[in-house]
Amino acid sequence: MTPARASIAAAVFVYCAVAALAQSPVPAESAKYVGSAACASCHAPIYARWQKTRMANIVRDPREHPDAIIPDLSTADPLVTFTKDQIAFVYGSKWKQRYFTRLVTTTSRSARSGT
Image (tube, rainbow, N blue to C red; front, side, top):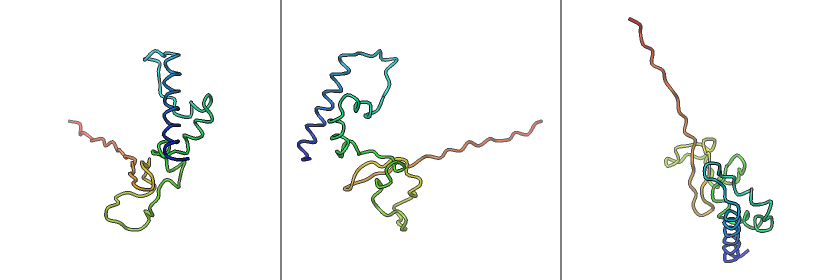
């Protein structure tokens, strides 16, 4: 698929999503994000094409898509301060990638001596 056709497919996909929302308004307090997969049931051909575009795959979970992490992170690099296992999401594609790592928070309790 050419980039122009991918752009047209994405535009059609967005247009259909907006038109569907305009036809069935949902009260703001009950509205919630349902994800792009929810569009597949009514727009299967468009969704199938969209799934193959870079826009659809810009943010990927490496647990679901191990191929999302392109570089070899097992070699030492002073600029890399995390391990492959710490990556929560990959943003980008073959030209440029960014990695979101999990934050580990610990809670500490301080003991007070009774007087």
